[in-house]
Image 1 (cartoon, rainbow, N blue to C red):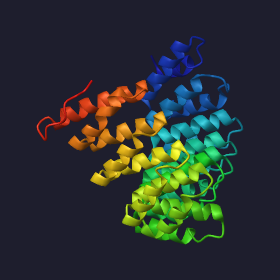
Image 2 (cartoon, rainbow, N blue to C red):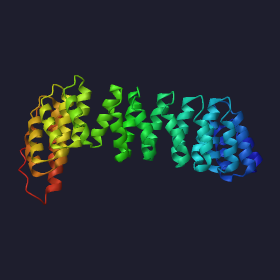
Image 3 (cartoon, rainbow, N blue to C red):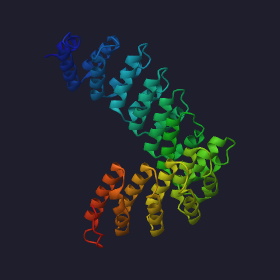
Image 4 (cartoon, helix red, strand yellow):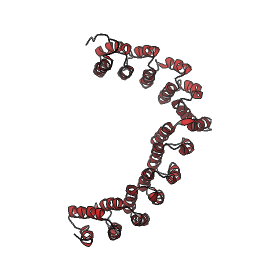
Length: 355
């Protein structure tokens, strides 16, 4: 079928025929096809499924002519056309689409901006970074969250200052992305910036920076985190426990011993996780103590941590859990014992099963 016929078939009432025509045109390529697809895209109805098929075909064809045409559509009055044009640029990728995606990052519609964020990441271009850093302060929280996540994927130390400057973020999902990215990037530069933020005038910023310092293993945060173990907010106590567990200094571990009887099971579960990571003989004693906790979730956490430690002593402590009154704890304990026996069968003999 000739290109002219295929271009006409795009508007066929039979969607299957139209899709096949678009697919074929995408495989053929060439200036006539590019111009025809761009013209058709401009005129398609907002609800037309052909928009996305055309965008995909243009993305497959790529090239300078396609990119220029798609960039011109980024100022179209129809947000759906701007959106699919952005998708096409994302599909083409590479240095050549950065300018177009930076333009899309200024679009009045947040969904278009969000698509542009991920497209900029996939270009792997240094020129994308300033736009992504600016997106951390976008008016839409979903765009800010995407920018934070993408910067973590990039692992660029040049993003650290902007991420730390965004610790005042009010949306919890965006903050989670920011903190995850700072942890992912890590390094001395992140620690130095966070130490400065730990002395910020904002209590929220100071606390968040302190927790992240602990998570990155900076012992300078120890005293503040220990103090936070007595905070009335259960989630602050939980975060302090986890951060101290990353520091792992004798002072930090000693402080954690004081919260095995915290009134919240959330905090006690966090303590179990920390000592499971420590895995020493004394840590096993703490897990054994927490194994008598009245809360099922704490005992279940203990069982899982004993499984991770996976030595003969951990298996010995696990045996009583196979008689636990909670089915979930019993079931997890039996599975954990089986896994330990499988991995340790050629090592020290394990105590006999009582199930």
